[in-house]
Image (cartoon, rainbow, N blue to C red; front, side):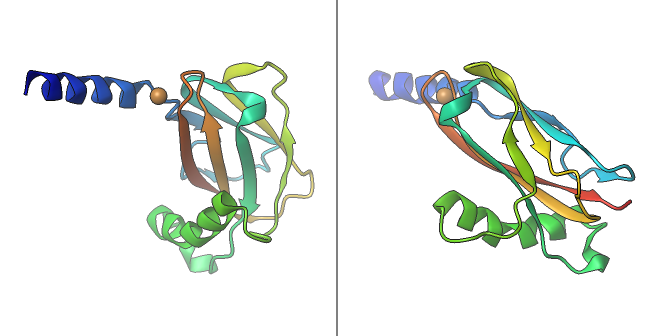
Length: 145
Ligand SMILES: [Cu+2]
C-alpha cells in the first residue's frame, strides 16, 4: 500500500515535468489584425528540437466561427488527429519549418509563409522533452487582416 502511494506521488510529479505548452506568440485563441511572420511556442521544459515535430496548418472553418475559439478548437480536432497520425495531407501547411537552431530549447520558432491569407490557423506538435517524455498539443489563432 505504501508502495502504491509512492508510485502515485511519483507519477504526478513526472506529469508536471513534461514539456507542456506554457505560452505562445501569437497566443492561443489570439485574433490578429497584422499578418504574423512566425509562431513561437514556449514549453515548460526544453525539448529536443530535431526530434520533435511542429506544423502550422490553415483550418477550414466558416467565417462565423472565426470569432469562436472553442468552435475552432472543435473544428481543428480532425486535422490535428490526421497530422499526428501522419496520414496523407492534413490541409494546407503554412509554416516553413523550425527556425530554432539549438539542439534543445524551451522556445521553438516556426517561420510562416509570407503569403499567409486571412483565416484560422492551427499550430500542432508532438514534442520530445529532455526528460524523454513526448507531449502532443495544438492551439488555434485567427489572422483577420
Ligand atoms: Cu515528463
